[in-house]
Image (cartoon, rainbow, N blue to C red; front, side):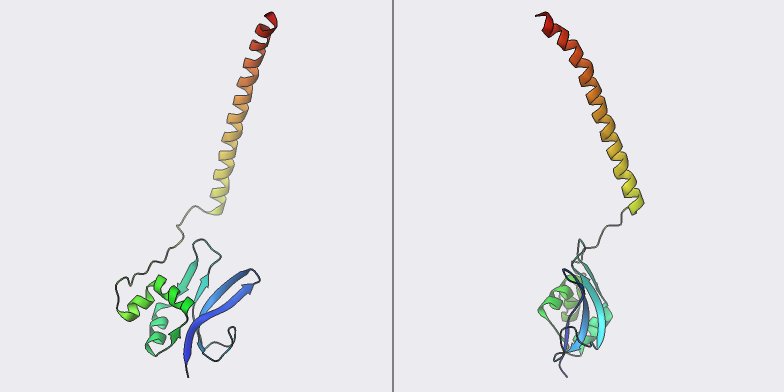
Length: 141
């Protein structure tokens, strides 16, 4: 049986994510898979790629052929280089930096908005104080 490592489309319309699966080459794109070895979500920034390296190495070792898209994902995670014995087996996978939680981000944005609002009101107050001083001088001329 000819096996392929390919993507199985999941999700809803215009918001697809994919499972990296092992399938018989004759099955439909979203048909029954032999095994699921990972996921790929292009909707996040940067894209989320999670592949079980041990299982990917096994299936590549027994002759499963990756599709072009999956080959690119395997190169990013470094599994293809590990399989072929090439340099760069650590891959170029980018991960999201751990940052403050959502509540802290909202609080930071609100405090920034309060500072801007206070600065704007001070600028308006300073402008209204200067304007009456200039008006009588203009009337005297």
